[in-house]
Image (cartoon, rainbow, N blue to C red; front, side, top):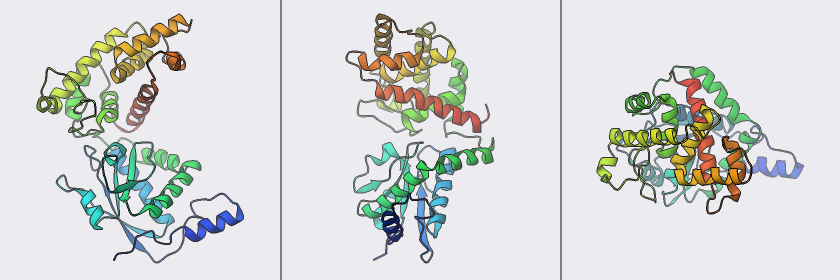
Length: 322
């Protein structure tokens, strides 16, 4: 039987550090074992092989391998392959997936998610290795290591990356028609579906922009051009609805994004509640502050959605040309 690649890694370091009551660093977590090979697949459906998320995961994996004296082998994913099967059979040691996809993978276990919503997936019987991975990730998050790698990577790639997703042409066309930066629309689609065209939510939302519409068949909504066209028409409607609610164009954008996520009715309810409480309803941060007091609306997901879309847009703007 093939031994796990991380067998015995960290045990001595963790015990010693606990005994000394000293904080762990990534180098304290590393032990010098004979080089082993960590076979990885980065299988992010819809993400280009040379995309930003793929590249960042490669950087982090290389850092992990260096810290643990491991050789690293990347297996280029094929569209037709099921790498969960490969992981189960032992042909692959670690699989990088989007967190949302990993939630539906029975028989497997994943690490804590990275900020870009990816996770590292192992077989379900690898709990010890997963705990060690999580310990390493926690240290790297705590000491700013991952953030530093992220900044350095973006500086290095500059504008050399030109494709955000396989649907760039569709996104650019529809973004131009509605007067949006295509990178902003891409950021929104990323948080709707991770560019996985076949995405279908528990509530029946389908496709790249997670459309729910009884007038169209599922097959029609799974046509990327149709899906993005319907989504951007709805966005245009929401942008018009909230054009005068926000204090400026950025605030109006936040309202439109929030409405796309939770429905315009809930956003209007939040605005009315703010007005009743004497809070300036033209700024999204003010709306966020009174959301806990809005009857029948929790809003945590919507608050996170608006923030994450704008954060991703900022990241895309730093790397991809307009």
